[in-house]
Length: 342
Image 1 (tube, helix red, strand yellow):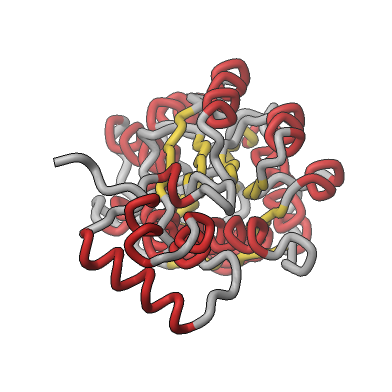
Image 2: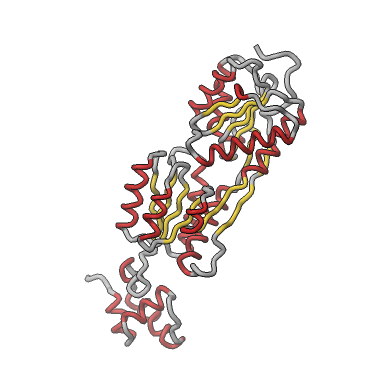
């Protein structure tokens, strides 16, 4: 049997191919009686619209690209689920692109998405460039950028900003309230804008709580478990040693927990640890991790819906949006030990 085409549907319904496409894509008003004829023909012929047929008039492929930094980072799992929920509900497919924090690789992926004629691209990579966004937009493709404050980007694309400051303030206030004074921070790579912003929010929170920051307790990590392990070993050489550590993400915090346990330390009695992201594993490790949570599934949903709104209503959509963060207290934080950790 030959594949049923949009022409077959149009012939059976007695309408033009463009009318069939308008009914399928909901791109233009079609009289109720005509719609019924088209839908009846689709049902009788068991027609399944191809991507090309669906875009005949709308010139859409009903596809979108999603750029992330690290497919192995569990932070992205729920983000992707949120994106896919909205995409599926709106008849869209999503191409997942893993940049591995590599700008050259990221640009190659952008060109691949452009070649596929995607309708839009969501940028959720910690390391990206303005040129990537410009390349997408100049090809008449809508873009949504997550957590990158840049006035040039805001002129080109819709943005979702994460308010890390509130959650970090809560984390520092929690530790100071427990009696901690020597509080360390392990950042992400400081060539990432987001890493610098989170570290600055930490330093500001210390000052607000009346604690003087100690540069020897500020360590640059790599957002991975081994980076947390290495950062902990560096902190153990500091004088004085920290009684608490705040990290830029949960994977780094897990590395700190692992390294501390290898050194024979007990958490939180010997050292308190706070992560950021609230990944699933955070509540399942021993002890369960105190962390700064953000609504990852909701971020994915918001990003995909914002992209769809940019495609359908570019002139009226609210292009700048924000999501919040908050502290989730579990068992990895407690009052500091009365004697220094040895």
